[in-house]
Length: 74
Image 1 (cartoon, rainbow, N blue to C red):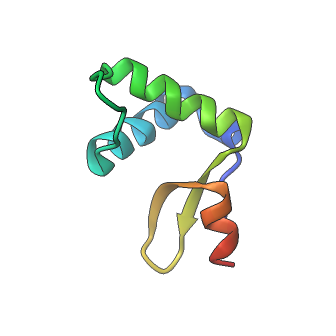
Image 2: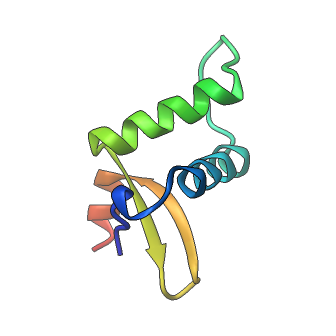
């Protein structure tokens, strides 16, 4: 189930994104990005709709997925 961003307060959304970037360990190329930059990049992807915030009832967890990856799993 996709969680609409507007249903979360900014502190909660920020904590979810921070947990995601620390858990996932993303590749930002040769230049190391700061935690703040990584959070901003993920937030932008969520706002633009290229990534979605997803709640799994089965695992009772929240994750961030690329939109096309989520749609393939439907």
